[in-house]
Length: 115
Length: 113
Image (cartoon, rainbow over all chains, first blue to last red; front, side, top):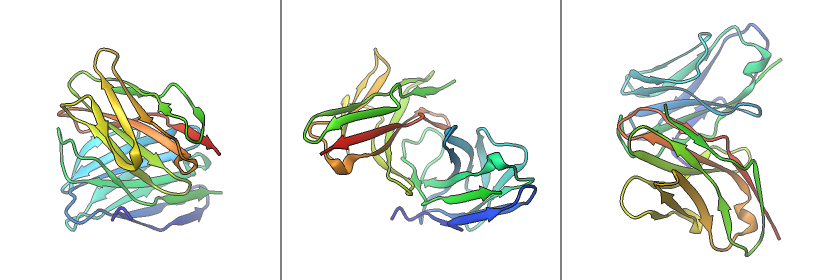
C-alpha cells in the first residue's frame, strides 16, 4: 500500500459526459501528479500540483482540468468525454518540488470506461 | 527537452538467469533516473533511483541499475530472475532542477520457470 488513495476504482460513463476523479496523497506529500495510461499511448504525464499551485503541464487536453485543494487532495475533471479517453488514470505524490530527487508514490488508479 | 527510451517492448528470460532491461535517456542538465515496476491491475511501485555518486545503484527485490554517463544509459539488472519478477518495468528521468518526470514506454518482462 503506497498511502495514495484514489476514488472511484472504476467508472463507466457515456460519451459527452463529465466525471471527477479524486486523489488523496500520502501524508506529508505536497506534490500531486496525474497520469493517463492507455494501451496505445503508454504512461502519459498530465499535470503536477505543488501545495495547491500548478507546477508542470504535460499532454493534458483542454477538456481536462485539475486542482489541488488546501487539504492537499486533488481532483481531475474530465469533460466532453470521448471513447479515446478510456484509460487508467493514476495519481502519484511525492514530498518535494523542483530539483527534488524524491521518487513518486502511485495510487491504485481509476479505470475509466467511456461507452 | 528531456526524453527516455526503452528499446525493448518485451524481454524474456528463464528463471535463475540474469536479466537486463534497457533504458537510455536525454536531458540537458544532470539527470535524476528512476525505475518503477507495475504488476497487473496495480499502480507503479518505486524500485530504485540514481541521483549522484556511485554508478551502481541497488534497489528493492534484488534489482540494481548501472548509470553510464557516456552512453546516457541506466539499465536495470538482476543477477537471478524469479517468475514473480514478471511485470511491466518503467524507466523515468527528471532533469535535475526541473518539475517534470518523463516515463519510458515500458518493457514487459516475462520470466519463464
